[in-house]
Length: 97
Image 1 (tube, rainbow, N blue to C red):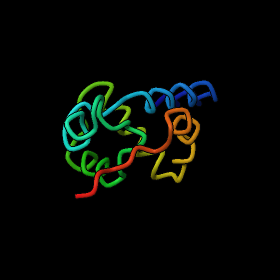
Image 2 (tube, one colour; image 1 turned 45 degrees about the vertical axis):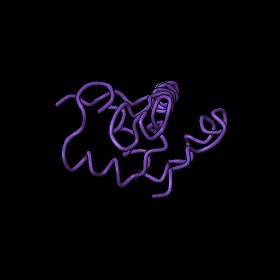
Image 3 (cartoon, one colour; image 1 turned 30 degrees about the vertical axis):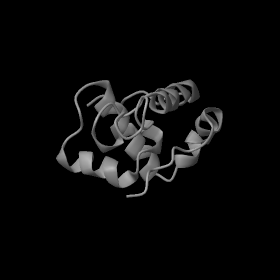
Image 4 (tube, rainbow, N blue to C red; image 1 turned 135 degrees about the vertical axis):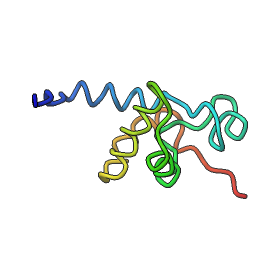
Protein backbone atom coordinates (compact mmCIF):
# COMPACT_ATOMS: atom_id res chain seq x y z
CA UNK A 1 0.00 0.00 0.00
CA UNK A 2 1.44 3.34 -1.03
CA UNK A 3 1.36 6.29 1.33
CA UNK A 4 -0.63 9.22 0.06
CA UNK A 5 1.32 12.46 -0.24
CA UNK A 6 0.94 14.87 2.65
CA UNK A 7 -1.25 17.81 1.58
CA UNK A 8 0.40 21.21 1.52
CA UNK A 9 -1.01 24.43 2.94
CA UNK A 10 -1.98 25.41 -0.61
CA UNK A 11 -3.86 22.11 -0.98
CA UNK A 12 -5.79 22.86 2.21
CA UNK A 13 -6.55 26.44 1.11
CA UNK A 14 -7.83 25.12 -2.22
CA UNK A 15 -10.03 22.51 -0.51
CA UNK A 16 -11.49 25.08 1.91
CA UNK A 17 -12.14 27.47 -0.98
CA UNK A 18 -13.95 24.76 -2.97
CA UNK A 19 -16.12 23.80 0.02
CA UNK A 20 -16.89 27.46 0.76
CA UNK A 21 -17.91 28.21 -2.83
CA UNK A 22 -20.06 25.09 -3.38
CA UNK A 23 -23.76 25.34 -2.48
CA UNK A 24 -26.22 22.57 -1.75
CA UNK A 25 -28.10 22.16 -5.05
CA UNK A 26 -31.15 20.26 -3.73
CA UNK A 27 -33.00 19.08 -0.64
CA UNK A 28 -33.92 20.97 2.48
CA UNK A 29 -30.81 23.19 2.18
CA UNK A 30 -31.15 23.71 -1.56
CA UNK A 31 -32.23 26.81 -3.50
CA UNK A 32 -35.92 26.34 -2.68
CA UNK A 33 -35.30 27.16 0.99
CA UNK A 34 -32.04 29.13 0.52
CA UNK A 35 -32.41 31.20 -2.61
CA UNK A 36 -30.83 31.82 -4.96
CA UNK A 37 -28.10 29.13 -4.86
CA UNK A 38 -28.74 27.01 -1.78
CA UNK A 39 -26.84 26.91 1.50
CA UNK A 40 -23.02 26.93 1.28
CA UNK A 41 -21.61 23.51 2.19
CA UNK A 42 -19.48 25.09 4.93
CA UNK A 43 -22.69 26.20 6.72
CA UNK A 44 -24.55 22.89 6.54
CA UNK A 45 -25.32 21.46 9.99
CA UNK A 46 -23.16 18.54 11.02
CA UNK A 47 -26.31 16.46 11.60
CA UNK A 48 -27.27 16.90 7.95
CA UNK A 49 -23.81 15.84 6.78
CA UNK A 50 -23.95 12.89 9.19
CA UNK A 51 -27.20 11.80 7.56
CA UNK A 52 -25.42 11.57 4.19
CA UNK A 53 -22.44 9.81 5.79
CA UNK A 54 -24.79 7.10 7.09
CA UNK A 55 -26.79 6.71 3.87
CA UNK A 56 -24.24 7.49 1.18
CA UNK A 57 -22.71 10.62 -0.30
CA UNK A 58 -23.94 12.15 -3.53
CA UNK A 59 -21.87 11.13 -6.51
CA UNK A 60 -19.09 13.29 -7.87
CA UNK A 61 -17.50 16.47 -6.60
CA UNK A 62 -20.47 17.43 -4.39
CA UNK A 63 -20.20 14.20 -2.38
CA UNK A 64 -16.41 14.45 -2.05
CA UNK A 65 -16.63 18.03 -0.79
CA UNK A 66 -19.46 17.23 1.64
CA UNK A 67 -17.41 14.35 3.06
CA UNK A 68 -14.33 16.57 3.49
CA UNK A 69 -16.50 19.28 5.08
CA UNK A 70 -17.78 16.77 7.65
CA UNK A 71 -14.23 15.61 8.43
CA UNK A 72 -13.13 19.21 8.97
CA UNK A 73 -16.11 20.01 11.21
CA UNK A 74 -15.79 16.78 13.23
CA UNK A 75 -12.10 17.54 13.77
CA UNK A 76 -13.05 20.80 15.48
CA UNK A 77 -11.68 22.90 12.63
CA UNK A 78 -14.86 24.68 11.57
CA UNK A 79 -13.14 28.01 12.34
CA UNK A 80 -11.04 27.48 9.20
CA UNK A 81 -14.12 28.62 7.27
CA UNK A 82 -14.38 31.96 9.13
CA UNK A 83 -12.43 34.01 6.55
CA UNK A 84 -14.78 32.73 3.83
CA UNK A 85 -17.84 33.46 5.99
CA UNK A 86 -16.58 36.97 6.74
CA UNK A 87 -16.06 37.62 3.02
CA UNK A 88 -19.62 36.40 2.34
CA UNK A 89 -21.18 38.54 5.06
CA UNK A 90 -21.37 35.94 7.83
CA UNK A 91 -22.68 32.47 8.53
CA UNK A 92 -25.82 31.46 6.64
CA UNK A 93 -28.82 31.58 8.97
CA UNK A 94 -31.21 28.66 9.05
CA UNK A 95 -34.94 29.42 8.92
CA UNK A 96 -36.98 28.63 12.02
CA UNK A 97 -39.64 26.02 11.56
